[in-house]
Length: 271
Image 1 (cartoon, rainbow, N blue to C red):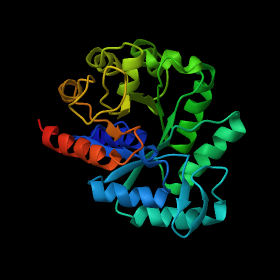
Image 2 (cartoon, rainbow, N blue to C red):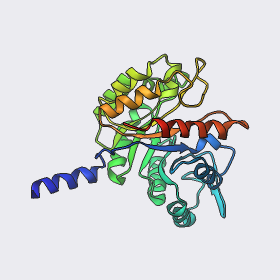
Image 3 (cartoon, rainbow, N blue to C red):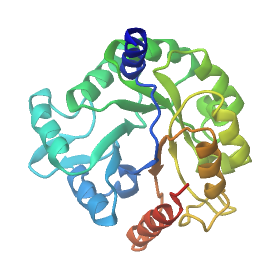
Image 4 (tube, rainbow, N blue to C red):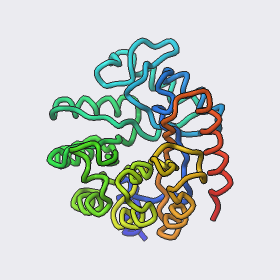
């Protein structure tokens, strides 16, 4: 029994115990024209209980500065963290974020630590991954590897689920996937096969995006991303990553379309 308790403690400390249900979160970039504080209020109104912060927004509310390691003064971070802890929406991740050298990456991890953010969404050059793995273990902050489509030259390989899974499996348990299933469409990757491949490694989160034939966002269930099949494949594997809604359409219909995504998820988030 003592050995079993020690094993469970070690696994929990490593952050690899799987949840038993999906968490739906809003990627704040969906409302990039607003501040972080404004976006959190929108998230609550639309029915979200979790959010992935972005580095393109002003902090907003009583705070001066921007939601970045270099534009949020250290002296206000305790107050910002207190606001995030009390706002009623859990911050599950932050990104996509990058840096040019180890000093910059350390500042990113310190920023996440200061705000109590347990996961960073990154899209690094492959040669940077060993450094990120080292820092992830040092700070006890997970790294989720994102992908854009094939138009982003250095990250094209991350859009390939086979490549991503193989590289993740070379790293520690602090490194996993934060793939964007909408961008797979641009690379002509079948979403169902893509998730089956990624599930051979570690999947921390997904940008859960439904798109049409032109890779433009549509409300969940209206497009070609096979979201229902993805949910089934992940349940079958007993893997429950955070599902992040990033709706890259900025007009008067955005809020209504995001709410339609929440409603679809609530109707389909059943065994």
